[in-house]
Length: 215
Image (cartoon, rainbow, N blue to C red; front, side, top):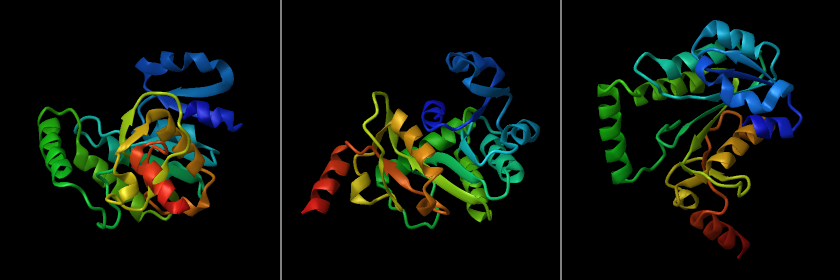
């Protein structure tokens, strides 16, 4: 996301865990780094001051409300009218109209229980985080990502309002393109108050969709 934002000429302020600040060293003085946790209101308050857009990854680490705390800090401290772009997985639903396979629902149920049991992640907290975002009056977009793979960019992903749309069937997006969609969403007013589910533009289901749309 940092690279995509810099490519578009944005000034970038990054919040990063203190132990991971070194990973951003390659950007040098092209960005400003504020060490700290994203669920710390003071850290977020300093980071988003004066920002016209905020990109937020809702990571459900631990069982202490990390995702919901992060979302709330951004909602509370972002400048009124700022574009707020959040990211999560396909399992989040805004209106209950998403259609999930039996296997995906079973996996999420089992993984969610085990992860919380071992205090690794809390999927329910990510759901709560998005509930707060959906209920807010801010200029939000929640980008729901498919499974991710590494590799060079294939271009801007395709999206749909609901999981279950055939265009999303491949359930695969390049990680770099997930970030690309996040940054592009900052300037796409069509996505305000939507939760687009995305898929790689070169995935088989996306290519089938493109062929069908040209016929």
